[in-house]
Length: 81
Image (cartoon, rainbow, N blue to C red; front, top):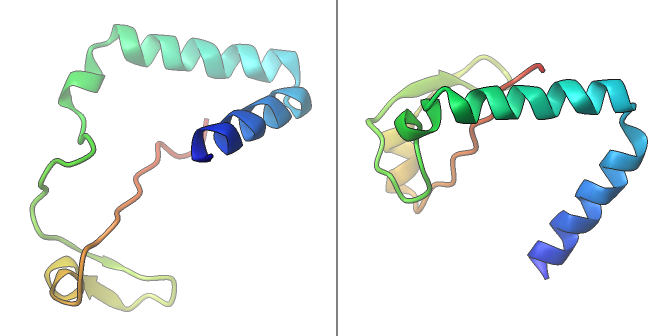
């Protein structure tokens, strides 16, 4: 079900993204794969050191404090293309 939804979203996005932009995105992904940087990245299930970051209101949030309340899901993204 999730896989189907992700495929649906990918197809919908591809229909909206201009071909020139899509080409840049695909080239960027290829460059990253070829750079071997993926071997150095955090992968699902990896343990990471505790850290703190500012939330949306600028208040520092400590990972250890959040983890004490239950499991955490951390989403990392590359940022601006």
